[in-house]
Length: 265
Length: 265
DNA sequence: ACCTTTCTGTTTAAAACAAACATAATATGA
DNA sequence: TCATATTATGTTTGTTTTAAACAGAAAGGT
Image 1: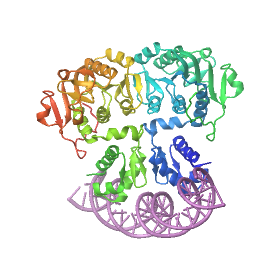
Image 2 (image 1 turned 180 degrees about the vertical axis):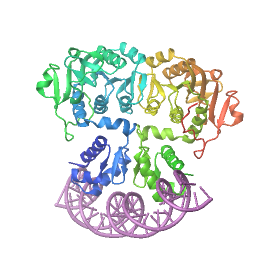
Image 3 (image 1 turned 30 degrees about the vertical axis):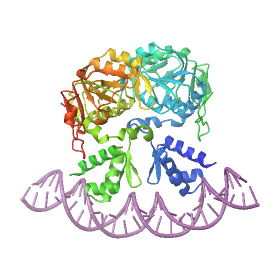
Image 4 (image 1 turned 45 degrees about the horizontal axis):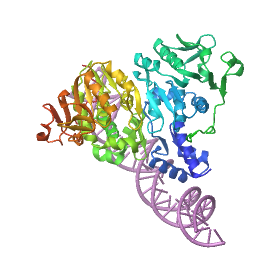
């Protein structure tokens, strides 16, 4: 492993974990504390992280840890694995919709280095993820649910009615063999439904915790999906009940599925 | 000064400066380093800041320092002073538009503790500022100018055509006695013009560096404005050429214009 | 092969940190 | 109001982290 690989690892590690200790990095990377420290100095100068006493934290943080990031960290490995696979489906030149949510947010993190890509989203945190990139972003607009940064309501709906896209990555809190995909409010269900209608192909992205649940407002039936991308905690037997095309990705432990280079297809 | 005042000061200081040293705070507040350190521990536990080695940095940061924040820091004191005054115009129950821009972003920072307020904006960074607050936010949507986080284009325009609000705080890069308010592209000018049309009263917020300049696309004439809020580097003689109602606020040095409490009028 | 540059680890001194105790300020309640 | 409890602050102390400086190792170029 060369110096750049190591520094890239530190960079992704601090983003994943939210904070890191020099001691941990020392063990993890097998180099001396001084070297880590020099790496951190370098990365701090490049605004990739902020050094703390004995470690570092990420630069980009828009949200209150307590309200959002904890939730985001649940099943983070799973979400990242799902996101990494989802990103491989996206082709150069595509126009895609990224639904609001933490799993789709992870997809955004993977796609941000792409060029020749248009993203439509109703999540300001996802939109913000693409700041200072070459990705073309269209924000739906609408009423901001200001706990999570998602937008819903008539304005959101009217934009979605006017568009047609190649791909949709749909998030959900509940998917059930009989009930299909459901949402907690009619408003949210309506927006998700319009997204499905606007897209050529819809992929559901959901970690195993969402399976077997159902909520009040119906979004669509499972037949409307192109497939489901989930993690391997969902047993293969269980998954048969859901869809012909269910992709069960293994939760990545280390940064093996590294799609961090730009895609110049 | 009691402990809470001091901690509040530290909090605003770290937000203003972007980072602070314990040594500086020690001199500034006249207490020992240990006390500062205890304050920082406390504020870190409340997610108000992140401690570094020898100081602290803000928690909320969404953007790359190099591309945006430097620009934002230009005339920051002036912008803050203008913003503090602008906020006093906003009444409980108002619905307002905050145009994209750094000065209007400062207004958002002042208003975020309000309740009973609706904000419409075409700037995702301003929208993000209101996350986890009680302010009701409507995002215009549209194409994201991904260097600055502003949205423009047909979608933005169509929302603005449908609304009517009490107040607009309009930002600009150029204001001129004869040319009025101008913008660098037709698209931007169109959005700003629609904002003016949607608002009962329009206040222009602009620091002195914007005066006497003009750009290509016309937004509106100066007569369309309710008034101009600027800083006192614009001479009173000079300002007469612009508008009857021009408010020249002194650039605040310390946190004297402190409108950080919530407004429960 | 040689030289140069970059990278890394070790040593060491300085700086920051935090625990513990003592003192001062503030609050609370009879 | 006074006594008492609580909270806040400063100082001392030992520990940890930092960073400068040097030396050796690795990588790159001619």
